[in-house]
Picture (spheres, helix red, strand yellow):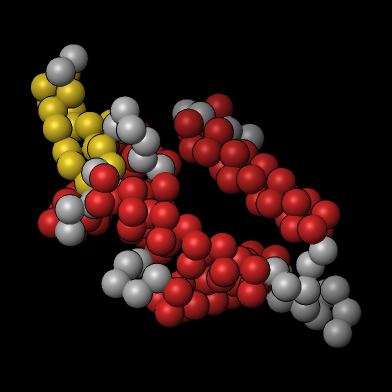
Length: 149
């Protein structure tokens, strides 16, 4: 198959994403990839809910549903921002930290399985390239539409 006959990179990335989601269901019993992503974006100081929505690329309504489930499971707590009572701060709980640690081990195993055919330098390069694409997308999303090329 020539380069022109192979699927576009975006299609390949979509297939890889579906594979990650499917395999993560086996690796993270009782937890979704979105749950995992939310927990990995939290720290001991807490994160404003709006910033969490932006970092997860989720709209506020879907994030609230996700956070409701995590809060019901005891993994997170939400509190009002003392500087702006309209905002919520999302904090990971001690239980959430344990859940996140268990999930980290599962995701490391999954990543090892997915990337088994790549050398450590190739894995590092892939990670750098994907991070750069995501950073460019985030920067583009912050630009006003009129300023985009």
